[in-house]
Amino acid sequence: MVAGIVLAGGRATRMGGGDKALRPLGGQPVLAHVIARLAPQVQALALSANGDPARFAAFGLPVLADSLPGFPGPLAGVLAGLDWAAGRGESALVSVAGDTPFLPPDLVARLQAAGSVALAASPAGGQMRRHPTVALWPVALREALRAALARGEHKVGRFLAEHGARAAEFAAPPDPFFNINTPEDLARAQSLL
Image (cartoon, rainbow, N blue to C red):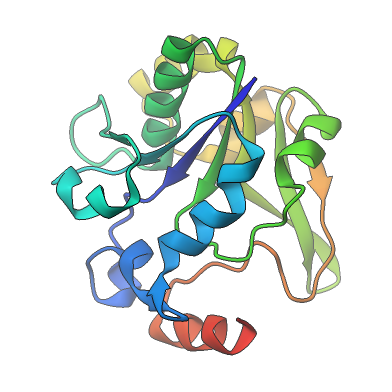
């Protein structure tokens, strides 16, 4: 059984701060699009975000804060998700970024088909670009991830590579993992919508 975590805790510095996931896109928050795409594919869904969880209350999902101090990045959000999934008795977790509104409807199935540890990839500039925050994580990896974070690991892709992650390749255009980092990206997402 697979749970899902939406990594919605980024600082959004290129967007001028705030929550990218709460920016409007097509009349609703970006996060609503992400949830609509991922929720049907998983047993349960939670958000990874620090700060006041009330800002996400309208979505009716658990909001998981990092268990580590400071701002350790997306790996800490994945760890919070793995701990939550383990408590639910799930065997795996799929993570996605909170600013990726075009996730494919077969994301989870294709990640599972790629391997027990897998990440998404899509074509960009004539090669396959890997998307480490869009990944399948076995719950059994959580203690290894906790140890990696304790020794200062912050690179999602490096941790996944160390644990034999395989790539699940998806077609583009449009890129199903297009993420919104800037106001220009938000305008482009609106045109793609």
